[in-house]
Length: 93
Image (tube, rainbow, N blue to C red; front, side, top):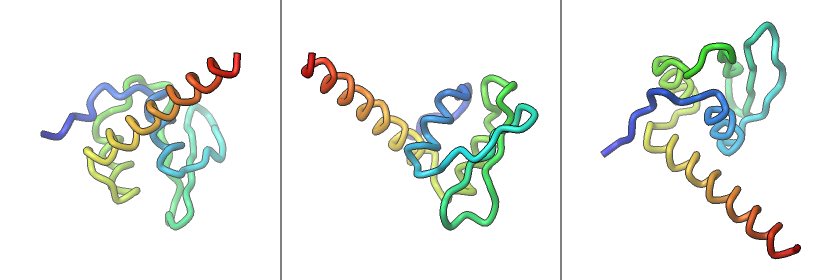
């Protein structure tokens, strides 16, 4: 069963976009603009509306040609990568 994409906060969206291979280009007037090679136009969303509305999330996924399941797979991979980095840093100490 697919997880929903309601109540996704801006921080989570940023992590997802980074892990999906997008790059933050600029922020102007409360709007962040992200790009990725192969996209016809940038992904833009408002940073002052929290959580990100579901219809915006669906538009972003459609633009990236991804499903809701892909969103959570990519985001969970990012969380796993963060934990691995923290464990590596702890081992170094």
